[in-house]
Every structure is written in C-alpha cells, then in structure tokens.
Image (tube, rainbow over all chains, first blue to last red; front, side, top):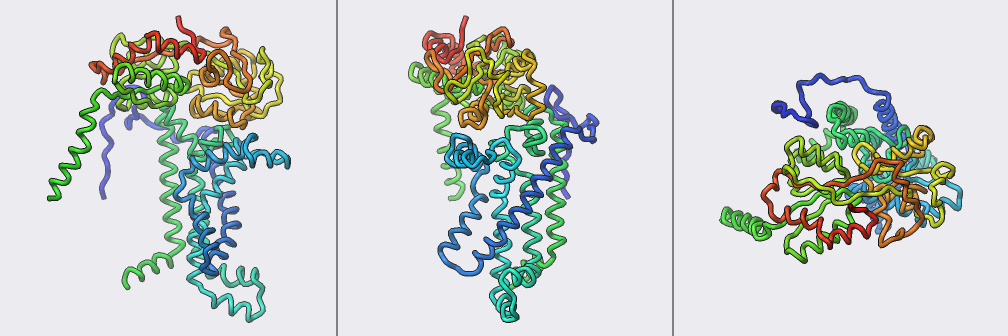
Amino acid sequence: MISVPPGPPTGGAGHFTWMRPLSLSLTPAELSTIKLSLKLATCTMAISLLLGSPIAWWISRRDTLPRRLVAAVATMPLVIPPTVLGFYLLFFMGPFGPIGKIFKALNLQLLPFTFSGLVVASVICSMPFVIQPLSNAFVALGERPLEAASTLGAGTLDAFLSVIAPQAKPAFLTAAIMSFAHAIGEFGVVLMIGGNIPNVTRVLSMQIYVYVENMDYDRAHILAGGLVVFAVLSMLAMQILNPRQTDKTGERAHR
Amino acid sequence: MKKITLLLALVAILVPSLALADEFQVAVASNFQAPAELIAAQFEADTGHKAILSFGATGAFYAQIQNGSPVAVFLAADAKTPKKLEDEGLAKAGSIFTYAQGALVLWSATEGYVDDQGQILKTGDYKHLAVADPARAPYGEAAYELLRAWDLLAGLEKDQRLVTGENISQTVQFVETGNAELGLVALSQVWKDGQFKGGSGWKVSPDLYSPILQDVVILKAAENDTAAQAFADYLKGDKAREIILSFGYTLD
C-alpha cells in the first residue's frame, strides 16, 4: 500500500492547506447540484437502456455492413470529445441552426440551456456503455434460446423479456451502472451548452469546475473527493453484482 | 544503440527550442483576442520575436500563474489582477500599465432587436441573457453592476434567465448562435472599425459600471526577457494603438 503524504503547506492565497479544518456539511447550492446530477444520471440510465437495448439486439442478430455501421456510430461517443458534441448541439440545435429551426417550427423547446438538453447529450455519450456490453451478451447467447422460445409460441418481445433479458442480466447491470456513473461525471458537454444555471444545468461536475476556477479549493476538494468515492463504489458494485463477468475473464486468461 | 537513439531524439526535441529562444508565452484576456492576434503578427513582422498567445478568463490565468504557468506577459481584462500579482511578488516590479480601456455592450445577433437606450433589457421578453462569470471575468463583473443598477439581477436569477459563459468568448458564442437572445459582452468582440460586425447593440452608458481598465504586466519569471519587454513596449506604440482603437477600446 503506497500512500502519498501531503506536501508541506505552501501558504499564500489560493493554495490548499491540509492543516485547515474543512466544513464537510454541504451548502444548499451544493446539494442542489448533487440532486441535479442524480436526476440527470437516472434519466440518462433509463433512456439509454430503453433506446440502447433494441439497438444492441438488432446489431447482434446478424453481421452485416449496415449493422456494423450502426454499431460504429453508437460507439463513436467513446472517442469523440464531449466538447465536440456540445459544439454541434449549440450550433445545429440553437435557434439559427437547421435542427433548431425545425424544433422552433414544431414549437418544441430548444435544447441549449435546458435540463432536457443535458439529458439528450448525456444519453448520446452513454450509448457506448449500454450498447457494448448488451450486444456482446446477446451475441454470446446465440440464436438457440430465442429459437426455443419461438418454438414454444412466444412473440419477439415476449421472448426478449422472458428469455433473453434474464439471461443477459449481468450485461444489463453493467450497462445500467456504467451509464449512470458516466452521466454523473458528464462535464464537457455541460460546459458547452449548460449555461451554468442554478437548479437547471449547474450539475455537480460543473460546480467543481467553478470552484476550481474561482480558487475555492476547499469546497472543490469536498465535492471532488465525494465524486471519487462515488466512482470507486459504483465500479465496485458492478464487480460484486456481476461475479460471472470476472469468472469469465478469469477462464479466458487460463485458456 | 537504444541509448544513442534516445539521445538523438532528445537533441532533436531540444535544439529547435534553443534556436527559437526569443519565443515567449503571452496570456491574453478573451475579450482582447482579435486585437492581440493582429498585434502579435505585426510585432513578429517588425521584430522577429514570436509571442505565443493563449486566451482565457483573467481569473483563470491568475490561478495558473500562481501555480507556476510559464507566462511571460499577461494582458488582463482588469487592473486588479495584475496589481495582485505584483503585490504577491509574482510580477516584475513597475511593469504594469494600462494598454486599453474596455467598454460593455448589450448585444444581440438579431438586427434591430436592441434599441439605442438598451430598454430591451428591462422590457424584452427574451428567454436568456448571457453574461460572463463575475467571479473571474471583469466584463461579467461590469454586467452585474449594470443589472444591479437597474434592479434586474434578482428577477433574472429567479426566473433562471441568466446564462453564464465560462469566459467572455463563450458568452459571445451563446449570443452569436442565437441560443441567448441578449448578452452583456465586451464591445471589442462585436465591433470593428466604427460599427457592429452584425446584429444590434447598445454601448452601455459608462456611468452604469466601473471603468474597465485593462492592464498588462510582465511576470517575474520573464524579468530579464528582452523579447517579452519589447512586446509590452510595442503595445504602447502607434501601430498597436491603431489596432486597439479599431476594436472600440479607448486610450488616454
């Protein structure tokens, strides 16, 4: 176990000093950012599972070029900086952008500076974390369970819900935890299209950024530390809830 | 053999930086981006020295400099921050001077939206007003002064109509893309050669906010850097002044 000893307090304005006692209680404004982040993560998880499951299913059924293309597009957010996505949302979905104009004509709310905007962006960013584990699991299950189910007279949806979903439970758990945890940490796109409005778009990661930029390092430490603990716990939860996954990799390593 | 390759690689990396020793870093407040780029190009043509510019919020640069960022010259958006750096012993003593005085403008990307008294700010049914973060962007601070003077701040905050850009450039971007109907930004960002580059705007009456004196400072680490000193001096020259004035700044 290696522990990093805190360096000597350097003093001077703006330097974080470990000697100072920190107030661990959260201010109402901070609580609001945490609530907002949890709300964003919950919405993201629910929507990306609902959208991602059928896509993952479709991708995993047959290996064709169009399906590979969809798989590639759905995985792309992994390698695209969220700022790029934020930039497109700001330009194309703003009132002067082509999509924004359609929204306006349909009398829909524009996405920038709204909570729904953050959800849309966050769902896009979370897609790879849902599609990857699910389509892998669906491929691993193969055709047989579904064929058996349809022999017994089950429709596609029925077969999916009563046969496939329970068997792919570990993958669903992984997808749920990953999309939730990822949304908690969503930042780049929030910075680009959020507008930092309290109770609307000022999520936890944004608040940490504002604290750091304004050199309020004490408060930044409290929130950032909390986020690290959350991240470790959620990844740990995934490992504990999903023992099969570790077994499988273990097996593979032995072969 | 491997060691020799490594050594050669190191030499290859180091030699160009030695040859270009008269390069130096300049931190520029976002509102001054366009004039700074023109001035730096002119400066390089005249002297051969290369100023490497980076842009951001004044407060953010202050934090970076405190934490050892290798900036030689800092063009701040206020007078307060360079003074603080000097007081903390991080600046070259006596190097501070005002290179431009900025102006706050109420601006919209839509033609004819902003009236010539700025009354739209009080009466308009706009959904969003974009401002910069007052905690680290002096133009954000000036915007808040105006909103307080007109008793609008509390209402706008309550109705969640105030959107905050990370720096003044992002604030302009919010307005340019139409996502915010109105913004309180730096005149220099939307002004060129005596007129608005587009949209409509009102130059906020100067008695509604404290003067935005933008000071430049040479940092301690570049105390003996002649190129950095030459750049600071160049800002006072006629060529630089002409560029600065063309963006709507005033000079004494």
